[in-house]
Image (cartoon, rainbow, N blue to C red; front, side, top):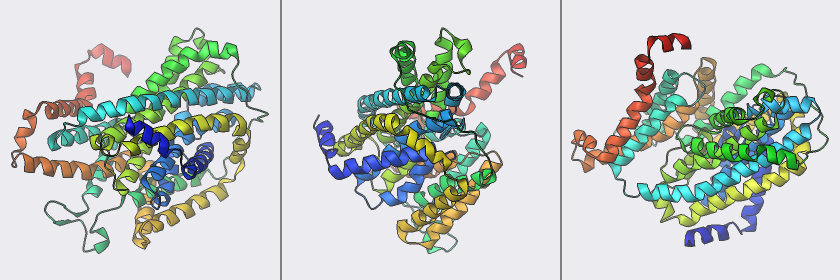
Amino acid sequence: MDGILNGLLALGDPQLLILLLMATLGGVVIGALPGLNATTGAALLLPFTLTMEPIPAIAVLTAIYCSATFAGAITAILINTPGTSASATTCLDGYPMAMRGEAGRALGMAVVSSTIGGVLSVLCLMLAAPLLARAAYHFSPPEYFALTLFGLSMLATIGDGSPVRNIIAGALGVLLALVGVDNLTTVERFTFGSHELYDGIGFVPVMIGLFGISELLVQSSALDQIRERIKLNAVKLPSREDYKKVWKTILRSSGIGVFIGILPAEGATVASMIGYNEARRWSKTPEQFGKGAIEGIAGSEAANNAATGGAMVPTLALGIPGSATAAVILAGLMVHGLRPGPAMFTEQAEFAYAIFWSMLFVNLLFLAIGLYGARLFARITLVPTQILWPCVFIFSVVGAYALEQSMFDVWVALISGVLGYLMRRYGFSVVPLAIGLILGGMLEQRLGQSMVMLDEKWWLLVTRPLTLFFFVLTALALFGPTVWRIMRPESARQSDQ
């Protein structure tokens, strides 16, 4: 209880409130710009938060996460182009509503659904994260090693690539995490005589390159693309009839979003798709979906915003990122010297609950911003891409250099950007690589601690019930789908082809 109250008192700092307001406005701008998303915004802002205290720094990153996820609905409805991938399903019914002159009503429903989903997810975060951390408080290095390995196995399902390609990208991230000096043996690995690599490859320059510069290179091929824009007069609150029609959908999708967000390596995009499909499944008029059904907007937006709070549960309680943006936030925690896990809710309870309260504040804040400022933010879509992306490049270079005032970090960001662009071009997702880089170091450290604890007798790992449980989950995540396809009857396999 003291942690909850102290966290709320920390939110009473006027400077923190101003920072949250600015971060929320910035997140809405980022989410409203096609091509940018919460992950890109958080990665670009990460180096500039390193001069802040831990609470304002992480609170700003989570504010970007929440507000940018909501703002993707603005362009999804007005120009049929989702500002973020999490709002892709919002296009299906939002744009048809805008075409028939109901853009304000569609945006109003998106704002209200996003707020309700976000608030409910933060309340669940406040309840679930401490309970999960308390259960994990009795973990020892073998259990943490098995848990981290399970988190890596979930990389097969994240990103746009095939499972095999996602695993390859994740393995590359783990390989990059091995660069530097081993903390247990003090042996140099893959440094090639460069003293800049002695401490390993930094998270921040790689994140900037993978999510910022690579997106710049991808978007450069669409500089001349012209999008049709719908005129927006005013945002309208949903009517009483609208609320009667969608309240069950909002609650259902919020629950789906929280659950999907908690799963490691899932995220708002998956949640929005499932929320939209379930809204159509339970609707009394499913034939209207895709033609301007307000339930479709509610189902998609409630789910993707609820996933933000859900994704922070494993991130803070276990150190396993629940989404790509949560991976950037996890990198921010580690750069600030904070270790997510059970100890955070006992030794740093004020910090944890300050983050929870700040996320709740941001979700309420973008309700007002969405209702009264959506018309203004909709004009952001008029910014020419020829101006936008050079600005992104400048922020990327400055951010990479500002971390250690090192040109080496700038080169790391540029190389990571080219690598990310090539990966995307050939069907590989960059998200598994980023998460593999973060979890790879944790995996090695926990394996080394486990071997010391077990006196180098690695086979004793499977004698521990929780460790064995996570090993089984890892095997199911990696090989379960293949085994299932093999075991299915031949007729069922032919029907899928």
